[in-house]
Each structure stands twice: as C-alpha cells, then as structure tokens.
Length: 366
Image 1 (spheres, one colour):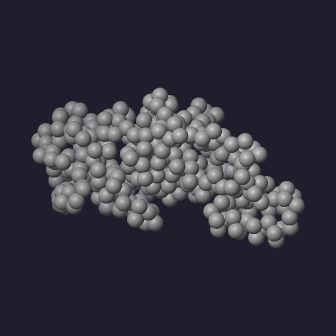
Image 2: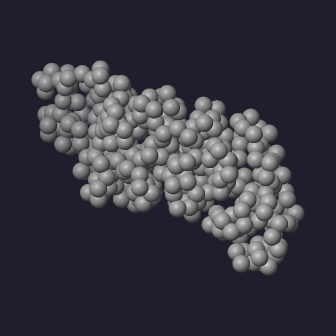
C-alpha cells in the first residue's frame, strides 16, 4: 500500500491528547485534510480544542508518538489507513462515528470483503466453542470474513474457524495493535497477523482498559453485515456488540441453547427482542444473501430416532445439562458407575463438564 503523503498530519492530530475521533472529524469537516487543519490559526482551532490540547499538538511527546507510528510501518504487513484512503472500509463509513485512523497488520484487502461478526462469552462451554468454530468455518467458506474481538472463548474459536475457511478473519483489538490482550491469545494473534488481519483504532502502546472494549465493539459490528451471538450471559459484553449492530442497521442472529444454561439466556433475550434464531450457517446466509452454503447440497437426511447410534450413558443424557443424580435415575446405575463413564466420555471428547456439577453431551457425540 502506498501511504498517504499527508499521513504525518493525520497522525499528529489523532495522537494529540484531547482531540478524539469526534473532534477530529469536526476539524476535517470544517477545514479539509489534516495539513489544512494544522495550517489554521490557534484562535480558529480553539473553537474545537482546549488550550491544553493545542499546546500538546506541537509538543515533543506528540512528535515522538508520530515517529514511533511511522517507524512501526516499516514492519512487514503493517499499514495505517485513514478516512482519506481508498482502502478505508466502506462499511465503517456507514456508522455514526467511524475512526479517522486505523492501524492494521496483515491482509489489507479483507477490509473490503463482506464480513460477519461472530461473538460470545469468554467463559464459553466446549459445545459453544465447537459451535462458533463450525459456524465460522462454514460462513468463511461461503464468502464472509469472520470478525471478532480476540477475546478468550467464543471470539478465539470464531477466529480459528474463520482461518480454517476461505475468507479468513479480522480481529479488532481493544488495545494498541502492538499490545496483544489477552496474552493467552498471542499465538493466535500472530497467525491472524499473517493469514488474516489485525485492526485497532488505538495508538501504539495503548494498554487494555475496561472502557476500550465497548468502543471496540462498535467496530466489530460496523465492519460486518450482521452479528452472530453464539453464547452469552445476560450481562455479557457480546450483547453490547449485538446492540451496536442493531443500531447500525445490521442483522442480528443468535444461537439458542438450553433453558437451564446461564450462557443461553443472553441469546434467548436477543431472540425475544427480534434477533433471528439460527440453527445452521445456511440460516445466516439466507438472511444476508439468499444463498445457501455448498455444504447444504451434501446435507444428509435426518436419522430416525431408532437409528441414532447412541449407546451407554449417552442414550440417557439428552441435549440439556444434567447432573449425576439424574443420570443415575435414568440409567439405573450407581453414582460410581456414572462417574466412571462420564470421565471416559469426557476424555473421548464426547461430554463436557459445566459449572455446578453438570454435564452435557457434545453435538455429534454417539
């Protein structure tokens, strides 16, 4: 990418303390490109910024921050995209508060591809993570780049699914692009920086802070044509992303879960308020484009109940979370026998342990 020759001006304004995105957009609207803004008199700029900000604009600290950003651009795959660049994502121009500057690393072309946000709980169940990965892979193969926030749980699973598909993934960070949070996802972030795209509106070196993540969430939804919530508690940050998506005119989708699971309550609340209930990637694709995934052509007919192939304890588990006492009643086995069988099934990846002493069969387990 050829950098904007006026990039220094964009950086100086965006890195000046007290000049946030809204103020910067106001300056651009009034005076034109950043170099024209910087050429204005102090009295003219005082209509938009405080004297403290105007003093800082030409300070040594801002000079250093500008040089640091320009130095970062020398690293492979790094770019800074401004509102004036052709590569700026058109989807973000549709939201009320597009960031004037984006720091990106990776495949810049993904900013212009159709995308879908896939978000959910950090404390996801094994089944929730499996669902996120499966949906993301299918949707990526169908032509939608998967956008999420690099958090633990559903976000990370969605990124892995996007990378496994044809249209890759975008991770929107709540930190500076050179500061990966959480550290547990550092390896995943490195892979996304090579095969997908990392995006941040925050200056280099910005640490994780609680108030950054709701701000980041509007970009996750803003880059996307819709938002799929896989698992979410009532107080989940994923619902902030879903709310932002609805306010931005995007479609909102939710995967239903067990009525007994706290991580399904957020999804159920979304469905009650108008989100579309989805059971497969094709449900999402039908809403967004009227198309079906290639996998639909090979979809097998549902098996009859008598041919399910379930054996042993799995035949008594159903699909809702259950405790050992209930399984003992259903199977007619002792607690020791049930515990031993559950351990074997868990080691085989067929059953997941949930909080509160509950167990759940994973989808597809037989």
